[in-house]
Length: 254
Image (cartoon, rainbow, N blue to C red):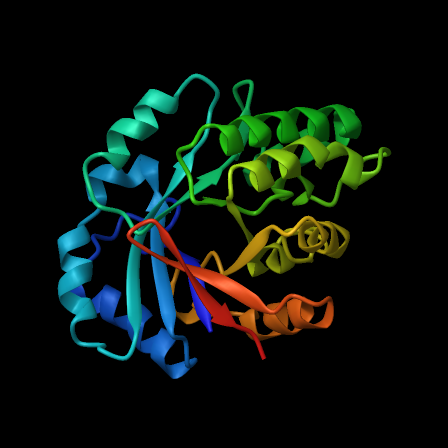
């Protein structure tokens, strides 16, 4: 139905985004029957982004709502940097993500061995502390891949619901949306972000969901989102959220 986490610029990808590349993403979205697609490149690629070009190509796809967002890397005390970026363009949505803390970029392939050496409860605890700060910052519409810290399959000894409790409370209090991100299935952990127990707890707290493939190439757009939608329906979720001009748009599931 919608894919609100799509990247035109891949990691370590030297290509320059052009109209043809954008068109490939939108054609794939149309083939998959999506109603809405949200481009959200990482903020560290800021100088490579061409938002007006996305708007121009989107006009070729009148039946597809094309949104422009940003995935901003949240680090404590860098709120001003993100705020300055957000003031430069009228974004439809903003994903707040945590891929590092205390100088440790934990989601790089070379970090896998370190995950297995560290105390799992400590790294989960610190990760969710930073996610909590991101949720409280007031900068974001969405928190991305809530339990990303699990990507290499290391699990905590403590209950995940206890570890994530404060972060979920902050998300609920600030009216943020959490995504079901299907890209985790293609990481060593081999499951969606967040795990099902967290999804069920998120629903119980009345927090809204969106959907994202985290695609970094056109062929991945919409991947496994039908299955993610079915999972949400099975546990009693009735709608998912898209965005326009930083405002939520509700799409009924089923």
